[in-house]
Image (cartoon, rainbow, N blue to C red; front, side):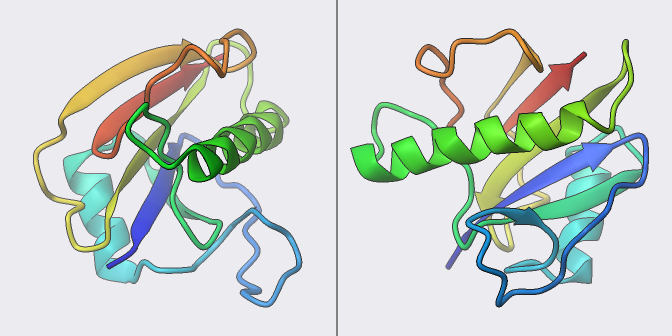
Length: 136
């Protein structure tokens, strides 16, 4: 099984479906299929546009993770916020949700709201099945 990370937005954003990309992180297909995207949209998000964040492993930040994987997740989350900060306008938001592929319709285990440009990456906890709303 694979840990996938999804984002939900109120606007369309540019995706990159080139799995052979040298980028450590991009927005486009990796693990999920169309049904997974529909399920996460229906059961987790409030936004009309849903994308997979492709990084060959999802974004999860918790004290129980391998420190190296957690550090990579922090780097990916910073990059994601940087990218989406260029898309979303003031008073808008995007949502993020990570889960094992096939568990998109499962009950979420937590939710939190963060400011897209104002959080301490070393003080947040985002385990799998947590909906995070990033506001601008």
